[in-house]
Length: 58
Image 1 (cartoon, rainbow, N blue to C red):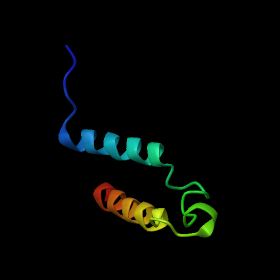
Image 2 (image 1 turned 45 degrees about the vertical axis):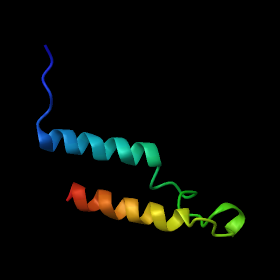
Image 3 (image 1 turned 90 degrees about the vertical axis):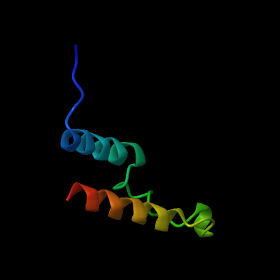
Image 4 (image 1 turned 135 degrees about the vertical axis):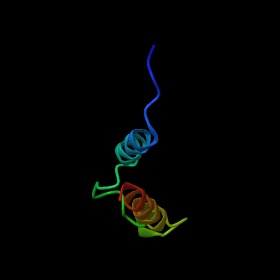
């Protein structure tokens, strides 16, 4: 029977999974909208996500 990971291990795994899924460190990730038209500002959303993940990782 497999056991659930402790909370620290689970959080580390979740952070790694989020970083792999969202590709936070790819050059295209922080481009402002499609065709630089700043629709919905994905750049700011991704920056916020990166900040939050860094905070929880620390």
